[in-house]
Length: 123
Image (cartoon, rainbow, N blue to C red; front, side, top):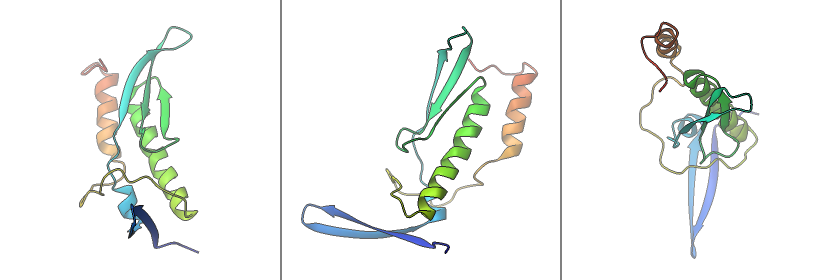
C-alpha cells in the first residue's frame, strides 16, 4: 500500500500538535550538510560528508563531488524508506516551498569535468 501522507503528533507541554506531510515535503526539508577532509589509514586524504540531523546519513570517499552526490542519494533513500515504513523522519526546519530536482546530474557532471581537467581544485 502506498502512503500518501504521514501524520505525527507532537506534545508541547500539555498541548498536542498534529501535522501531516507528504513524501515530497519530507524530501524538501533542508538539512545541514557537514563536509570534512581527513587522512585515511593509507595516508590518502579522504572526504566525509553527513547530514547530522538525519541519523545514518553519512558517506566517505575520495572526491568531494562524488561524496556529496552519494550523500544526496542516501538521503533520498533513507527518507523514502522511513516514509514507506511509517517511521519517524526528523524535520529540523520546514520544507522549502520550491526546490529543484533531487539530483542535477548535469551540474554535478560539469563540476566533475572541471575537477578532472584541473580547472578547479577541492581545496
